[in-house]
Length: 67
Image 1: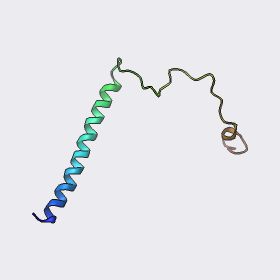
Image 2: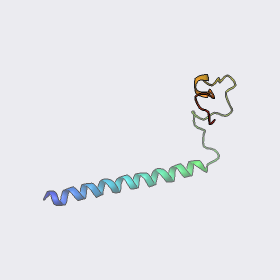
Image 3: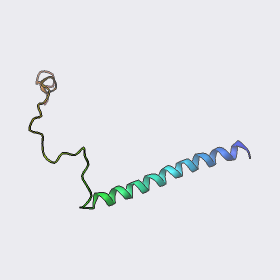
Image 4: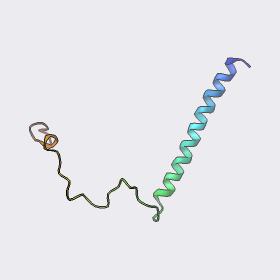
């Protein structure tokens, strides 16, 4: 086989595999999103953290005047 045949087959085969993987992942995500019994992410918070104190250096008006 020539490289002229192998290279496009590998390139399009890889692109096809990535597209199929993406579509399968999308369907699984949508199914889980609409499932009310799916557990919440461990990263998501149920309520705001009362102990959270924002960093003063990032919220000062003289650094960010348009906020």
